[in-house]
Image (cartoon, rainbow, N blue to C red; front, side, top):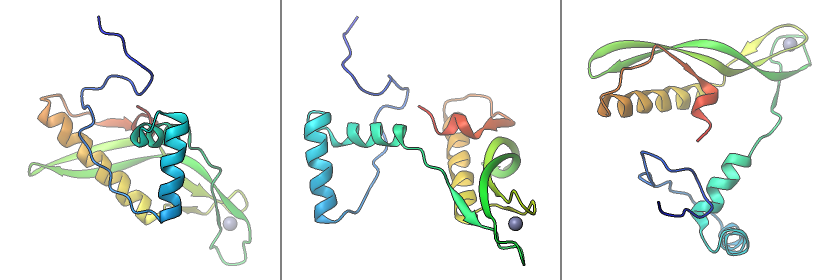
Length: 147
Ligand SMILES: [Zn+2]
């Protein structure tokens, strides 16, 4: 058995995705120096650790007329319609984050976020199809943001 060092868990899908990013010179300097300090110059490892550790309280102003409250993130179960290799497939995504106003009950789903979630779910289905796995009819958003 080979000894593994620190880092992300062994995956079926090892380092197969390149994530492009654009940074200022100062941000790139910070990335390189923090990687040198914390991960032995491995910038990919530093980014992985930072993404895993990232968590933030999110709010959004309520757009309902006369309501001046801040909306908070709650979760719902949201159906996602996909077209996989020409076949309609529906996935019920549980714990999908959505903004909800604690004052008036208004709910808002960020369009760009929803589009990105749909793209990720579609990619996951494609990956499962290529692995000859059965396609699930239900997923949990939380499972998509852990490794
Ligand atoms: Zn409101």
